Image (tube, rainbow over all chains, first blue to last red; front, side):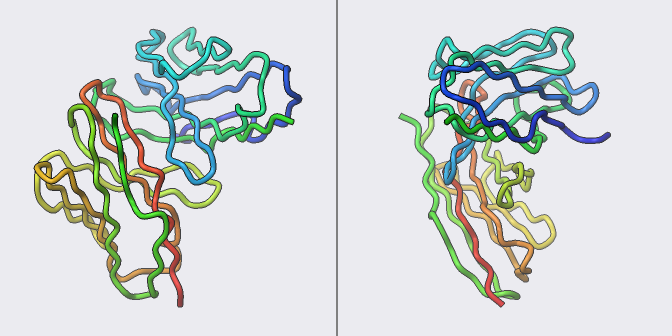
Length: 115
Length: 109
């Protein structure tokens, strides 16, 4: 068990470019969550998967954001036509049993800077 | 709307005790979590309360009063490594975590 991993750890991109982040959850964890966190704030929920099914997506999430978890293991989060307001830490978390109430294990995050 | 309130910053002395408060107003309640987050790192789980009362886990304890919409995290025998942000999060009726902005705890020798 190596924990949740995320790649890349840092990404600097120009406004208007597309970016894709990857998250590898703890092996055999059923649920996978994506959050966004800005400095001095708590994480903001973006979306989550139960195995390969995307069950919930924040209504705050614009159409420029899309996430996949094709085989129920790793997940990708893509942001199209990035804007400066997208600059944030993107956190991935997983939980083992697929229960609604369960501890979430977080990865180290991907810090995105849009210039 | 949904709201989680906690102090922005607190300072305490090494070896002392500190209590970090959290008040919440959410649509439904399925438990309250406390997470610790060191600067630049991911949050790590500390505690979960769903029933009223105190849960003790080593140097850390967490208390919940559902009728008051109130929780606190109590840290005893403070160590320098406890310098971090402490995040309060409530699971609402849709089983989504609603997070507070975090309390930055500064420990002085």
